[in-house]
Amino acid sequence: MLRNSQSKIKRKIDKYEIGRTIGEGTFAKVKFARNSETGEPVAIKIIDKDKVLKHKISEQIKREISTMKLIKHPNVVQLYEVMASKTKIFIVLEFVTGGELFDKIVNHGRMREDEARKYFQQLINAVDYCHSRGVFHRDLKPENLLLDAAGNLRVSDFGLSALSQQAENDGLLHTACGTPNYVAPEVLNDRGYDGATADLWSCGVILFVLLAGYLPFDDNNVMNLYKKISMAQFTCPPWLSFGAMKFITRILEPNPLKRITIPEILEDKWFKKDYKAAVFYEKEDANLDDVEAVFKDSEEFHVTEKKEEQPTAMNAFELISMSKGLNLENLIGVKEGYKKETRFSCKCTANEIVKKIEQAAKPLGFDVHKKNYKMRLENSKAGRKGNLNVATEVFQVAPCLHVVEVKKAKGDTLEFNKFYKKLSTSLEDVVWKAEGEEEKEEDEDEEDDDDDQIKCCSQSV
Ligand code: 3AM
Image 1 (tube, rainbow, N blue to C red):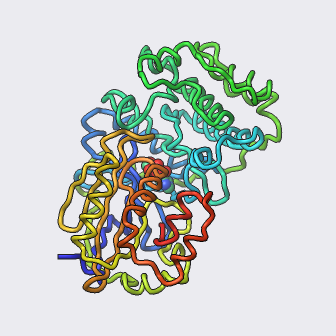
Image 2: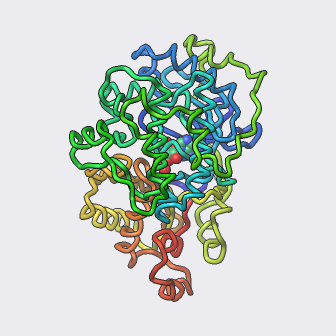
Image 3: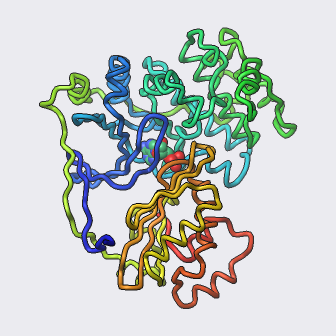
């Protein structure tokens, strides 16, 4: 049976209405949600309780989460509250809408020094502040550098370092879920290290990527990569100014005892240009009862996950009829321009659509798992953020009119966009285009990027 487009099951955790999966990080699934009392959008990190309790890391996480609840810094993703159910821990975070900083590099290439400096200054402001409160990141990498609506840097996952360390012990950091490109040599050597200096190394790698447009340490062979990192074997590109080059070399110093410190960074001539210290205040009245309750693991405080059947505000047919002339991004309520999810309409049977998707995905290296009219496409090769996983679902609108939803379930958003472009080319003969759209598409400039083409016959969320 195809899913009925008139009604929808809504999942609710406490007061939060749970929406789509935004992504999967090293140790958690991240879901979009909305506070039903205030309407405020949030991101919820969902972690298996087992992972925290089994590994005896709860004391450290509890301490760091408590600290993060007190922090309201303009360059740190805010942590609102924590909750637990019988099996999961939910970390409710501010929803950050500007995407990831590194998507800028992937889309537009390296940055000018002034722009890179601005982001780096914001990064150091965040890192300095958290370090001064005894919270270290230990896993600074592109996925954790988000941009807010005003284009300012927001560092996420501060306070969750015990989890990333656990991932490291489980071998995750160096395998499918991440790459060691940003990790300091002393962390790789596993001889015990200082969280503060290790974080600064990662900041140095991040600055290098912003200015160069590529990684300072990279090798297909992990052992060679470890060697390059341990010896800080990198070459600055010729376009870097002397000041930037000198500065990066002081950060990417393999000996942590000789590495530049934050007070020294704040005094560096290259760094200081146009520097504005962050303005913020500290919350004095944050209530830490939720953190206590989660880590006491008392059933009395467990939140329940409810499933409610609710009519959707607009059915798929209305959505399609409006898609002819309107920009749908606002309609769906997500303006931030993430293209992790998209829909298109098809004028053929559901079975034909499923078959077409399968035929298109297999040659692109995807394993196809089907369940009724839902599919999970799993790329067997690891990409920038692990294996790309795509979920598709076919909804019936009229007997021979279907809406196909294509979502990134896991992996890198840009890789997803590239995959979607290939998929839509293969499905061209079954995708239903509104009148006039075909000519419009032909007129499109050849240089248009993937995203623009996707918008032509579908809407992206
Ligand atoms: O899967 P991608 O890389 O597209 O950007 C984060 C990442 O997206 C996003 O969730 C994915 C897994 O970490 N994310 C994490 N925290 C977020 C937040 N507070 C967030 N997106 C918005 N707001």
